[in-house]
Amino acid sequence: MKKIYLKLLAGLCLTLAGVLFILANSTSKSAGANALVFEADSVDEESADGDGAADGGSAGADSSAGEADSDDAADGGAGDEADGGEASATKAQSLLTVHVCGEVVSPGVYMISDGSRYIDAIEAAGGFTDAASQISLNLASFVSDGEQIIVPSAAEYESQSAAESVKASEAEQSLIDINTADATELKKLSGIGDARAAAIISYRERNGPFGSISDIKNVDGVGESLYEKIKDYIKVD
Image (cartoon, rainbow, N blue to C red; front, side):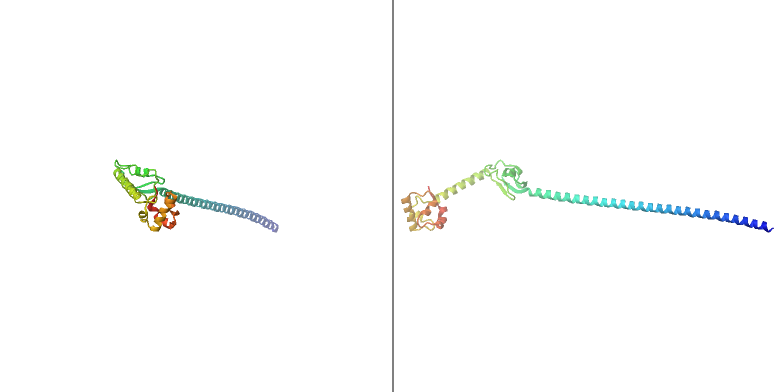
């Protein structure tokens, strides 16, 4: 009986050991699986974090590129504005303002190109009227900024020309001819008295007529300063 009892006890022990062995193996496998799952989750999280960082980097790069494009566009716009301003300034500097009046179709103030001539300014004002004198001005003259161009009528030009001729003739007649003037006429000149008038006449008699008005400086007593006083009032024929 005792032997039977021992055999049963031994069998139970073996059975219990087998169960424990099976349980131990199951626990080990379960832990390994859990470890594998944990590792897989970690890898997934790291991958996700990497993707997120990459996305963030891409977004940052896109943002930087966008800012760079914006800066380039701003710089381009500023450059265009500067170029436009310079072009406007250059254009303004290349224009002249001129006042055209008198016998033109449309008197007024006009903006014309730098380098223009009188004829260009008159054409800008519509051209000559029928009464205008077209020979009173040098139409080939260059226009200067702020200039006033007055076109006279033919009648005004003729009258002005006649008046200038009379004035020139009177001025010519009022000059004293130092080759023919007597002492009385010579003394009408500033700084010429009896002695100098006599010296001028004596010089003429000895050397012949004066070749030019400046020859009067060869007379004793007539120096440079006196000559400057009388040169506009004497002549030689």
